[in-house]
Image (cartoon, rainbow, N blue to C red):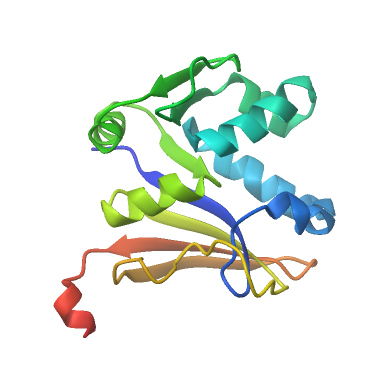
Length: 188
C-alpha cells in the first residue's frame, strides 16, 4: 500500500491560493481550525514543498514555539527545486532532478501521509502528473478576484469525490476530496 499525497491548501471562495499570509490570518484565530490542521499533521510524516514555500516557512518556523511549529520543525521535509543550493531547516532534503519520478518513489516508501502545503508550481505539476490522492481545502469566506488559483485554465479535467466537509465558526470550511480516475473524454 502506498502513502497518500495530500494537497492541503488555504483557498478563497474564488479559488485563489497565493499569498495566504496576506488574507487568512484573521481566520487562524479560530482554535478549531488550528486543531484541525494539527490533526492533519498527526497523520503525516513528510512535508513536500516547492522552493518559494520552503523559503517562506524556513525563515519563520524554526524560531517559533507551538504544537504546529514543533511538528513543522521536526518532521521530514522534501523540497523540489533546481536552484536551492542548501537547506538549513532541520530534516530537509532537496530533490533537483526527475522530480515526479522521485515523488512516486516517496509515495511507495513505508510511512504515513505526505502533505504538500502551498507550493503553487509544485502542486500544478502534481495535478498534471496525477500524483495527488486527496485535497484538503480550507475554503475561506472571501474573494480576491486575482491571484494564482489551485485549479486554473491549465488544469486537466478532474473528478473529485467529497469525503468530508466541516464548517468552522469563522466561516472557513475544511473539505476533503479524493481524486477519482476519469477519462478526460467523459468530461466533454
